[in-house]
Image (cartoon, rainbow, N blue to C red):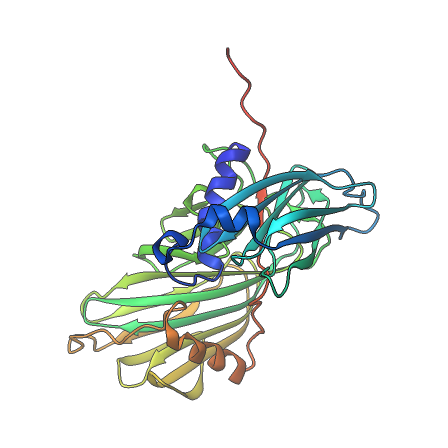
Length: 357
């Protein structure tokens, strides 16, 4: 993928991540062009930090800044880090409220991070973006936490997953062998058999850098060190009144937790133990959990007696006003603290095709 295609894809996804505050400026009678030219200005200081021990300085790396206002890019800026791996970009229009998306190109990989909101009250901001050296060797990565929330009906079970993956090394892994699209898969997650209608909600780079082979979801982005979160959803069909929900990964899964609405189905755990009830605004949910699940080993639930369910229970939607209740469930059972601030997206920086003119 060219840098332009990669940036366009990332902007579409990042626009979902930034805060939306209603209709565009034209609809409210605001002349955005005039605000950009005559409104207050601010500055953004960007510093790149090398996260690999003994790694080269990211000084003089190329930087791109996209200013996002109400899910639309209003300005694209190209810059370069100085000898101290710092750049300060000024004359930024902050009268309308913007969020910067900063992309740093280092060691053949792009690190893209969403910055803090900038406005007239907070015109000057600073960002630190950590970059790493790369490696061809697969690290001893693991699934630190895999949380599954289900919504059964008589036709299918809607499943929403939040997965936290950890790379304990200090280098960004480029992934495995290249496929026919010239992409390399790093994270692989095994979903239930017969999975349908997979939706990528957060942490991905769209289907341009993700693939589904049968029931194996492959993330085709370099895996940076520390922890990375993914959020996605799908449906599992109900056959003969049953749905088999089995989850696995090729590496260790430290914690797997599955939530099922109480009285929605008969629940038979496979490799999981009952963890009690959790009260939410959506009703009582029964929890099942498993710890230290070996790579390649599956665990999950079989839901039975789904013939009588004519109306699906409202699934927990991360974009809905009540989504905070799910986060309270996570905090209540001590699973993991999910990052709700800056989100880093790591992609390969592929060379531009040579001109044939």
